[in-house]
Image (tube, rainbow, N blue to C red):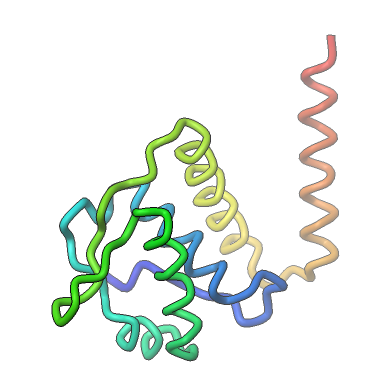
Length: 129
C-alpha cells in the first residue's frame, strides 16, 4: 500500500489537523483495523516532510479519543474505528472533497471557493419546495 496520507503545505489548515483528519478517515474506512500497527511518528514525518512534533500532535489527539494506542517500545496501534453515522459521513465527504481538489489542482483558491459556493447554491435551489 502506498503511503495513504498527504499534506498540503499551502493549505490554511494546520498540518497536524490535515494528518489527524486523514488518519481519522482511514480508521473509519478500516484501512487500519484495531490492532494494526501504524507507521511511527518519525517514519510518517519523514515521508510527509514535516516536523515529527506535528505528527506526534495528530497521533496524540487520536490517542486522547481512544482511536489510537501507544505501546511503549512497540509503536502506535489502531485501537478502534470512529463509529458514528456523522463521523462516517464526514469521512466520506472529506474523501470526496479531497478527490475533487486533486481534480482541480492548479485552480486558484478563490476560484475553488467560488465553485464550492455555486455547488452549495445549486443544492439549496434543488431542495426548495
